[in-house]
Length: 258
Image (cartoon, rainbow, N blue to C red; front, side):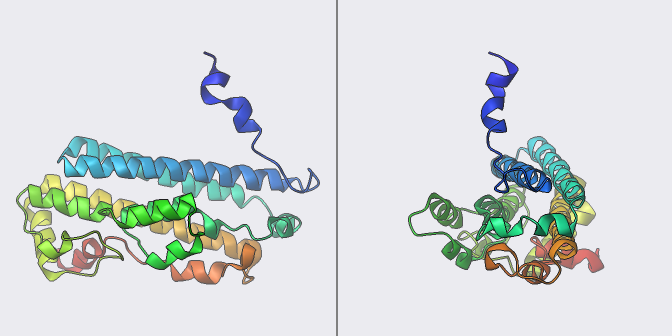
């Protein structure tokens, strides 16, 4: 077994096919950056599911370590935007038309990651063809508990008061604020430092995802301005609408009462 065989390097390096035929130098960078993003999305899905299992098992050391890894990956994902921003708008526009209907808006893996952590919109499933594996995966995720719910189950198993309604069925949208849960979280912050650490790392995760969204929006704005995105997607206008919406609402709501 060699390094190249184990990592399938020849196959990996064969996956970049610039449609400009090499005419546009930056197209290779654009392809590689987005392929790497898909690999990071795959890893984040892998870690998020592992994190859920650790939370359900009340395995705090594993949960904390996994959250820290996910945060480090998010920083790397944000850093990749710095590389992408070395490509000028003129360079991107020289091959943009070759993308045709392709758009990052269509990334099924990023959508799956969102569904796992709790940012669910059932309408998003409709963007994938009936019978496609992408659609089947997202539908299956809608039938599973979110990362937030696994966290709440972990708190409940530790003796904290969690409203049954929050755990009765898999969430289909971002959770709404719950006054009872907020009181529980406030009690945790003041009297249960080990559980507070878990809460704070979830806030870090939420903030990290928001930071990635923000940097992504600014990259799109500086590259294509107010134009529609590729494939007719809404572009920066849609992306801006996704900013500053927390995943774990009550962990932010309690900030002015701690």
